[in-house]
Length: 294
Image 1 (cartoon, helix red, strand yellow):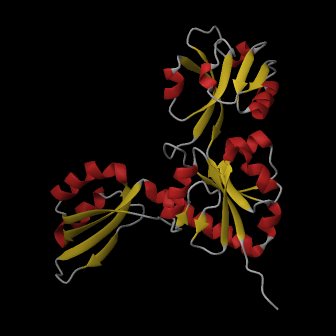
Image 2 (cartoon, helix red, strand yellow):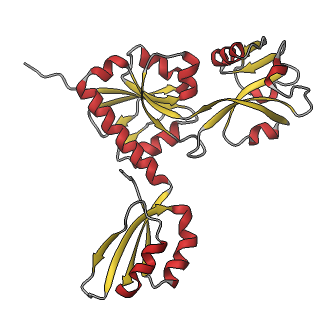
Image 3 (cartoon, one colour):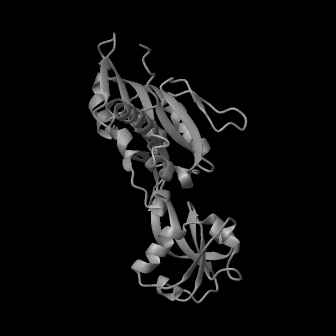
């Protein structure tokens, strides 16, 4: 009897998160090919079948079991009130590794100063469902219209305020808007269909995938560093090394010297290297990391 091949059906976010997601998967060790206008990226792992799906729709397809799992924003899970299992938070976005925010924004000269001032006003947003629930929870009655795009240009003629996604706030400032309040903070989540999670093989496959993705993310802001140290300088050098854990110390053929290997935040390196050199380190080598698995 022919055995059915085991497959994990994975949804990848199409749109603003697409390139950042593909880059993350490649760093995690997966060779992913996206050809032309195809919506079906090909993995070098024969047990994974993937499809590009808008992040706004991902949670619904996962909830309904059309795909087993996928990556989408916490905002779109909340927008759809999706009944899914959240497997992991993966903090990355289009422009960096920080969460994004949904904010209430108004023109700089608007009389709206707080969310209470939204009573009786018109709001434009793509995040209609969550915005309505947020307003209701705060006892605010306002009209919420779905925005098909270019939301920043709606005030003041088409809307009194907007609820818009921002990473840096630069687009809002460029359109002469100011932020009144943040109503939701969002990051990327790896989510699973609840029934698929009960399948032991699929659960293990997802857990392994998430472990590698987290390792790739952890490596984004870290580097490895190697150096040679005289035995007489070892204690002084160890005191200034901010390693994740204790540095790896290996004896060299010359018994007066050691090799030190550490992992540290990349932003520390430019301040640290001169100090290490001054403290007696030599042969300092900085190198990039693909994954850091705790």
